[in-house]
Image 1: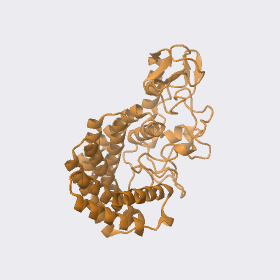
Image 2 (image 1 turned 180 degrees about the vertical axis):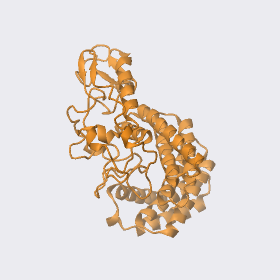
Image 3 (image 1 turned 120 degrees about the vertical axis):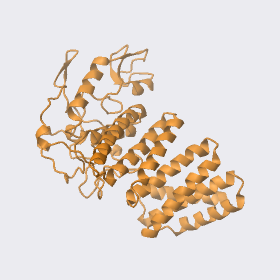
Image 4 (image 1 turned 60 degrees about the vertical axis):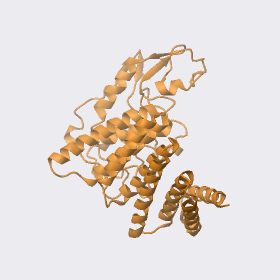
Length: 379
């Protein structure tokens, strides 16, 4: 799913605090911990973050037209990390622990996947909660989440330089808690720490709900907020699925569908609505409720066909072919072989009509995979 806060059209976040509040709090990380100097920014650059330069669920990453990656990557100096960051996922600690033998710190989820310490190679014989460090990280987040973005804090430049940030700044991001927790969540997701991603995106969702309530009281709920909520719920569904919690994943995908339906007429919301419907269908399909899966796949297909009536592109044709293939797969599993054969054939014709020269790398790979899959089904 594309990042709901990337600089595009009217998809912007609301609720930016007044600039004069920007310096009201001092960073709690300017001090020491266990005798070691702690810095809220700076430190050496992390290695090889270039390919993390993309949003969750297929986000676009750094825009060549001047937009800046909402994850904080792709700046001229690159994101910089400190003692508050896990050396494995490169994110602010979530449930920080220390290895019992060597004392090196990691997120609990990151440490749970290691047999040896990634820093020194010592055998992992046990982990201990590091409440002191986690408390410091939590204070750091509380102090900065309203008035800064992660991109600002980790750009390697003084935070003061970003004061007076305008709404149309090249970052495309306004400063508020929802943006901050979105960035934390997406970065954790991209690094594979799905536990941290889920918790931080839940915070983002809660902050967006507050903005929705404020808009309701003022009778001016922005369509963009429905888009953002729908997109965030979609990523939450992905996190839950990665964590093996299918029930929670279905709940979040359904929330995503319901929110995105409120943004009727918005092209971005329409695309994401079809994605969430298909993912909800996938959960039903692999949970052996094929009839329910077919209903969701068919609804996604209908959404995509209606969108194609407004505009036509090779990407849309490919997406319709994907939805047709999913419906056909469900029909085949239900014993409707004749209907499935017709749908597979229609999907194949659509795939063959796509001009691959205009597709990006990801969609070109999808086109190749789908063409091979359909050929196998029709042989």
